[in-house]
Length: 305
Image 1 (tube, rainbow, N blue to C red):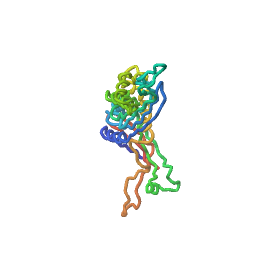
Image 2: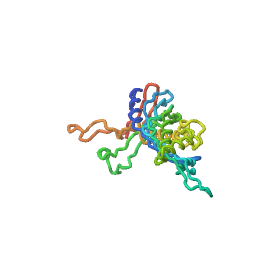
Image 3: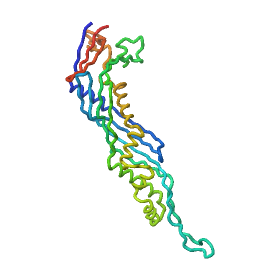
Image 4: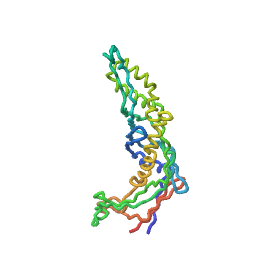
């Protein structure tokens, strides 16, 4: 049985990794009921960048890989306490009560917002350490009666696949920009304005004066101790568990369905030639192994029936 060895330099491995990384996409959404409010989110993100190193302990490590949030909306609904203005007596009844009252204007009840926070959130995979694992894929679509050539023509060849199998994936806490907090405040302010769209200006001004600063309204309604940005950080990263969702999705993406390299078995070494070989010349690959050192990836295998 013959032995073959193929090596890929650190630069070549970086290109292989980049190709797999750039195809990662994650879409996630959820909703939940919390203390005093309900919330939901919808997000789409991908990966970019990162500093990759090959290690002599037979592992690879990627640091500071960006989690790029392509789109993000965060919905929050809370109950606004009732506030009324007007309704005072204009013409009293000398005997009892009031003959004419001024109109009364009240707001209160549920307030719902759905600000678009796309581009307002950052985070990164601070560390991804992995080993390389070769696995053999028996194509379930290949018929028992198919020859290797038949299977290749039908696109049903068996394959050797090399996967990045993460040992750990560490995602940094969600970092919401200061602008996101301002957008959240504006969304609440616009929602309250919408509740008062039919009110006269004096009623709007008076109710706004009674409510006080919008940020205080939000903190009171949502029971926020810190600032709005901290609330959004915690809501996304911890309450909805987005950090864990990203970690799990990245680990499964690399380890299960997206090999960094694969090739058919038997492996074709000569194209068909009318003069010499009417069908492709293929060799079976056995006992594939992958090793990493600080300079390169080394793939070894046996050639045999």
